[in-house]
Amino acid sequence: MEKIISWLLEKSCPSIKYRIKKEILGERDKDLEKELIRDNRVNFFLGLQDKTGWIKEDFHSPLGVETACRVFLEKGLEPSFKPYTQMLKELEKREDSFDNGSLERVGKILDRKGFGGSNMIKASVFAGAGLEDRVFVRDQVAKALECFDFVSKTPSIEQVTTFYRGK
Image 1 (cartoon, one colour):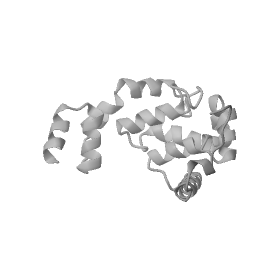
Image 2: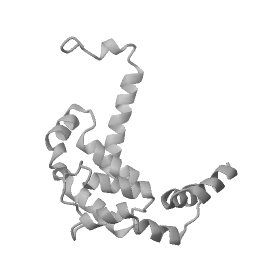
Image 3: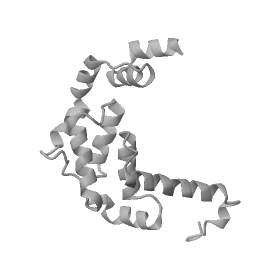
């Protein structure tokens, strides 16, 4: 394992190096943190944020808040990074109005049917940031576990599916 870690620390991009140091070795590298904040993708999303921290794009689009949060997470940025914190606070504050755009109709329908729509995506963003203590995150985890339980007790696919248009 040490050989692999050493190789990755030598050959990888800054975000992989940072995450290995932070998540595996338990070290904090302030120089790598600064490098991550200067990353082109991070700065692209920082440039899209308004003064509240929100990005005025379709939440679920390649330019939206969901994508920005995923980029910040993948780069290893902490939710305490002020622009990330602002974005998450704004997302939490918006409650049901955050999913205007592509999720406005479909996401809410999927939520009502229990298939994991807008609310599951929002919960995933917060869970990825390590903020699982939110009630809405715990609710979505409970719903997902209920689904897993149901599926694990279903003896055959035919019991939960129907043919539609011959398929």
